[in-house]
Length: 112
Image: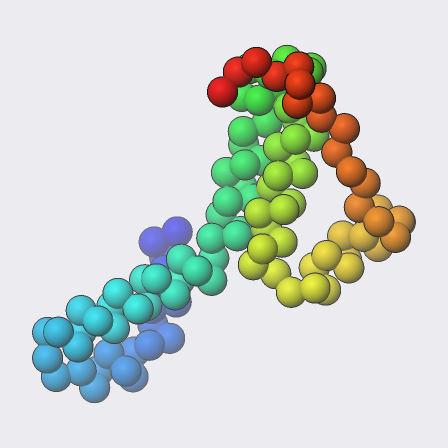
C-alpha cells in the first residue's frame, strides 16, 4: 500500500515542486492523502470484508450465512467507489437482470 500511495503522490510532483511555504506543503500533503483514501477505500474495504467471512461463519454459525454475508457486503462496499458499469458487469456475470435479495434471518441473530 505504501508503494501505491507513493505512486499516487508522484502524480502531484509538479505541484509539490512549486510549493514555497511549509503551510502550503502541509495543505497539499493533506489533500493528496485524503484524495488517495477517497479514491481507493472501496477496493481496500472489499478485501477487508472478504477476509471477515471466516470470522462471520464462526460467530454467526449458519444463522446468517457468514460467507454470503461477507461476500455481499464486500461487493456493496466496492460498488460505492465504482461507476455504473461495475454494477452492470456484475449483473451480466450472474446472468440476471436483478441482484438477488439476501436471505439473512436477522431475528435469529443474538450477537453484536
